[in-house]
Image (cartoon, rainbow, N blue to C red):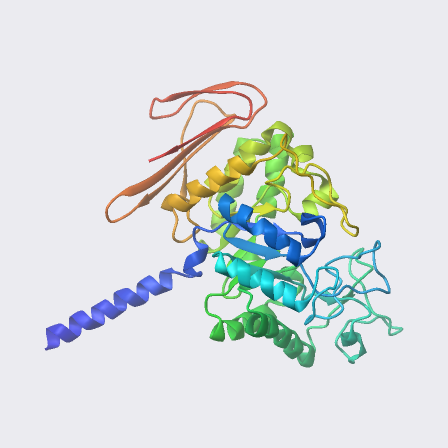
Length: 427
């Protein structure tokens, strides 16, 4: 009897350890994420029209749809004719530009039926200056004259005051509304590092009591270790993104990439998921398209985002061939251009990630090892996941230069690579 009890306790202990190891929702480990710019994705710019995109995204291998903010936009200091998604006047409503609540719920239901998870872009740092919240004393920062305060050059917003508990309560209530009443699967949180971490810890813990499988993404890297301790699953790989741009432009090199990974591994908790990307709404509109920033290296760095640890992200138009900077405050439809289209590239990369456990996000995936080689223009790495019955391995050899390169790895194998070319080997 004692032996049986001991075995039972041991089994429970092993089960508990296994559960603790799975820090994130199980469905997130092999997932890829897609940022939906509803305004620019279709000629109509509505959720009803965006439903027609879902089969293409599904076929391409997308798992998570991140919807940019879809609430009504402030008017009194609006930028452009349509305004910024991130100047919200009412957290618990739908911007009529995109349709109705019923339209969003129909889009969400269809996405869920097709197997997608849908997260909403959440703007907790500020509201529009004409939000009803500005009428509540102490809910926003004000200057010595009592005027609402803006932040940076964001003249269409007013910063919220997190010293006010009533405001915090209402913010959490609004987040609950989207999860409890609408049924979304989590949040991407705008400028998350500008909001006190203790709010995120409190709010996300409360939300997970009823939504344990919710997924959270913080738009921040400086506080990534702190934010991902309990509140967030994933953070922005901003620094890696900027190094990729610089390598493509000849300003940095392979050694700079390895130095980045060494620093990130020592300063950010290993179970935190880094979001890897070559473009997003900020980069596209303000700093240029991926073609402008990366030139002929676009495909190489797209593949690089799948090979290195983290979760790859795609932005609206990245698959279909958009190659212009989208106006942020106006209607500006994405390009659908076969000459630039990358659907096949991403479909193959997404399929590779889904089938190879070595590429899963931490802690379900494998760490990345540097492979020694005789050419400093080559990024060569290996990720190997040892399983009970077999081992999954991915080896990548990437020419990060505008010149043809010959490289011999320490195993003796030689590769001839064209400029910005790469080979990925799966075992």
